[in-house]
Length: 212
Ligand SMILES: O=C(O)CCC(=O)C(=O)O
Image 1 (tube, rainbow, N blue to C red):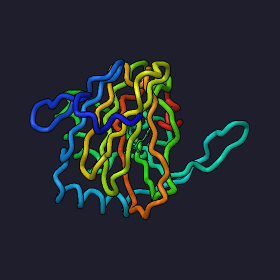
Image 2 (spheres, protein in one colour):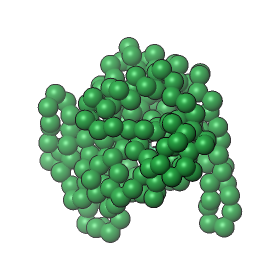
Image 3 (spheres, rainbow, N blue to C red):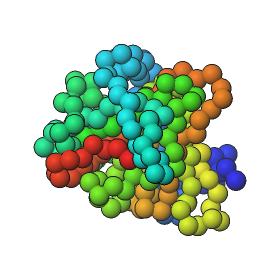
Image 4 (cartoon, protein in one colour):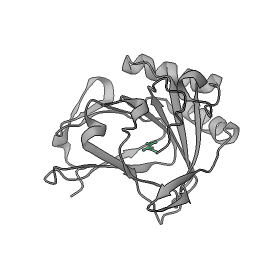
């Protein structure tokens, strides 16, 4: 069961911000957080100026190339040696996210989904380095892709599907990542590139890279 079309699962917060009313879930969705003209400009700059990298991830007993490209930014003391230094655009975006959420973030993981073949498998963001019940602020540019959530042990709650649009902010907090998993499915449709930024609060353990 996909819950997105059920209007009773969210209440409208102030000025277009949506809060979802589902167990163990703390999500705030703000479409149009970055207005279109600015979103267009960030999309173009991030797409062409980011040193996108493929990376290897464990799958069962072997390593496979992840179906997306990534870049990891932050202060090296906090985000680890692999972190790239903040760029002016990423700092601008971080400021806007911090102002909206009232939270502070010290690292950001950029994901590039080149086309419909790129995806992210079901997972939750619960690595040791971002702590229990992390606050994660996601900003999307480019192609709208559905972002799906499923509860890990309450099977009576259906899947939630949120289309993440160009300029949308999604804040995941509280127990969301403890009780829910999320993923971006592959699509057979013709899809343009999508960039997603997840701003994170990482611990100073010297070897974080934000990757699952
Ligand atoms: O691309 C997205 O919207 C989500 C990315 C994600 O799940 C992650 O970086 O952990």
